[in-house]
Image 1 (tube, helix red, strand yellow):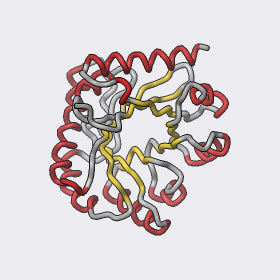
Image 2 (cartoon, one colour):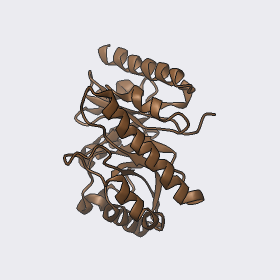
Image 3 (cartoon, one colour):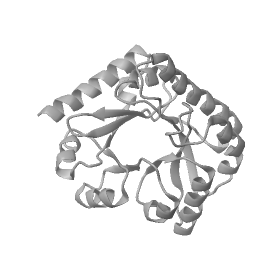
Image 4 (cartoon, one colour):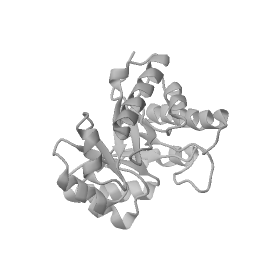
Length: 240
């Protein structure tokens, strides 16, 4: 099938990029973003071993979770409004786009009410584009100590979106800024947090994202054209 061949093609391209960057390809897995795709279509990827799936709408995610096997792991992507936090908390394994300190505080408070700790990524605006969500790197530095003090969240890393351009230098600069921000925040956090994941890159620039993070894990968003999905590669541990 077309979607199966494209899925395998993406896996092969990620593996090749990993090898070119001195990585172990087996350390990278994928997150398939199945928004606007019915579960029966997405199940074709599950049948090939896919277990991580992501949605940007709570209602659609819940419908798919009811149909999906229990061993699937679910990720929330896209902008999360504070008035919808209560429904989302406890239903997803990772929230990818916490774009403000206020949102992190709300997630923490609701998580504590439910007796859980929620895994999150902090969204940084490294391109300077007003159309993109997230705090600029300096703003995250200023409030990071307060984020670390929150008992209801576990910060696993950062996320950014590069501008949609063919200018490789601009793209690389955005990814480099996120990597440097992570390095600085990790120094501040010490053992209080393990910022092991970066979410950055799409189908046209994921190779640049992989090149920019040679010693850490990263989430690389990719577009699976035939199914209308996004994919993210995750490297859960450092490869020396």
